[in-house]
Length: 155
Image (cartoon, rainbow, N blue to C red; front, top):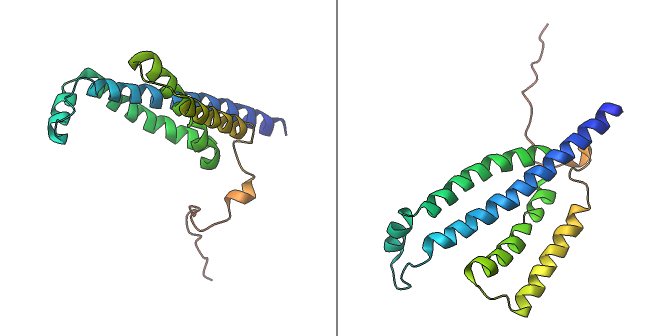
């Protein structure tokens, strides 16, 4: 009983840390993508835009953050339900919106602020639920990975 409580608490801490990292990595990478395209002429072709952005450090920083995010996400999903974790990462929408306003001087009109507030409210509501479903709930369905096949003994 005590071990189960320790495992749950320890797993919860890993989930909180991993989701915080997911929000931070996603937010910073999005800001780097934006910075990489700053100054690219609006009439540039997709190919020309790629050529310009590939030469910018912020592009490569964003790419590296996405790779880091991939490994972080694998660890989050090891300890949390996807139906819990993915909606929590919507917190990056809030961070990116505010950071875009502060860094790039982008507008935050009232309807965008209301939408951002609703996203934040949703993240807060979902964060109040358990991060892991009951074991029996996970075993229902056709996409649950099967273990190794059982070997039959023949007399």
